Length: 179
Image (cartoon, rainbow, N blue to C red; front, side, top):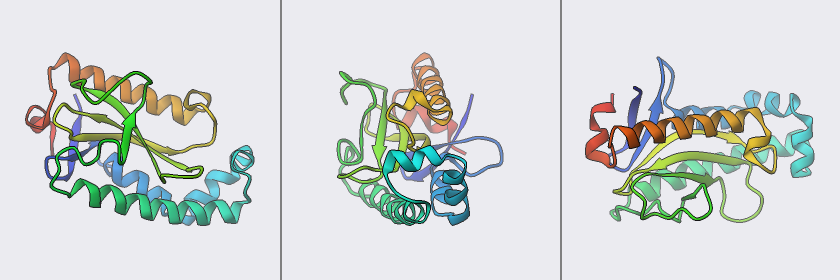
């Protein structure tokens, strides 16, 4: 099984593995770390071509985007509306899926318009709560075209399958997983 951290009461959770930060905070800690972002692009110069920017610009844009993304998610999650994260932040990962399904794999873009560097991947429960499973700096057109993307997709599917098989469809059901 796995453990979860509660980020916003009964609305936003994150996968927690081992003694590390939960997936939500780990993503944003990385994306706010200048050295991490710089080294990320230094080891993947082709990613800069995807965005058409240089190292300095990429770092600056990611720092700005991640700060706004973090604030947006928390502000919207703390609103009264139980489904406030639907369609504003998260959208179905797969074409044809909709928010009527009890468990749905979703994605969130770091910004609404223009090309976003950042992605978060989460599972939406039937009551509109979300479990953040992971995130990444997008470097390819298709998620399956990079190793980080494949790993996030695999983890997303594994966690969704466990929840379905265990019949954990809402916040009440996952309560036993929160540490």
